[in-house]
Length: 339
Image (cartoon, rainbow, N blue to C red; front, side):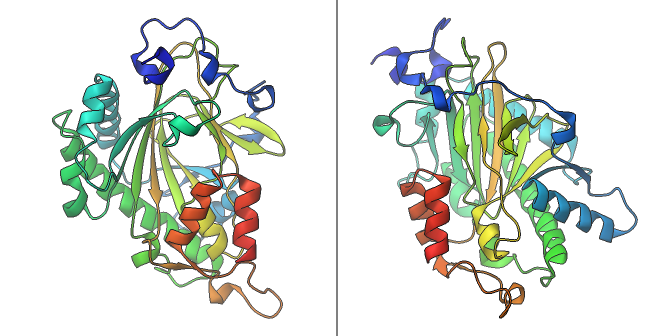
């Protein structure tokens, strides 16, 4: 096995970017902008006595950026720190141990991989290792989560429960902003959350490669926990950094919410860049519908003057097409607009 077939985190003292990780010129990161005028909004979920202000802030941010950060969100700092620590402990293990810990599920819902799940078919690779597994139901899937580090299941179980609650809180704020009944997104529409823990080792030349390609998420919303710079959002045709706010979560709109809101809310394209000095670990909690649930524009948001922009489909049909289009935004948009 050659070096570039192994996880980047296992490469000893790598001093160059292997050819298979060098991206075409037009896909490379280029210059990164950090403009305080274009920083995504930070919403304080407990910052007002009047809930209406919070609803307005959330809706304004989702319409303008498709992204926002939340503080005073109800998840304890200790739990966030413990969870990030255990994710880092997992990614510090030997590649063969990580793979072994993620090979217990016969359906391969819990897995560890490098670059993407299509590594062998990729034209070029991404500078990351990834761990992913379902978070519902805990009784069904926890047995397949990593058993090492020893405290992984205990800590991540508590984290998953708290993020499910936070997701419900944010979705209810969005319901109010859109004029939907509170709880519209509960049940099957938010029934299958999945965790994805990305690890981006230091890269000798971050200008040549990416940690993650530009994409929009196939979720209802995504809740991201990050500690270092690396996330970029495309705004007005420029890539801007999403600077981490200590113990905040980044929230972004996914395609499913775009469909249900009948295009009123849309996520922005985003990607992950690398850096040359420190590793970066981030954890994305995707709130997905159950596979057999129908996703379609909410009837309360459509009428003769505002007809449905998207058809009705089962989430598993959407997900299958999203993956087949490799998250290409133009192809995905064409598909959801033609159903």
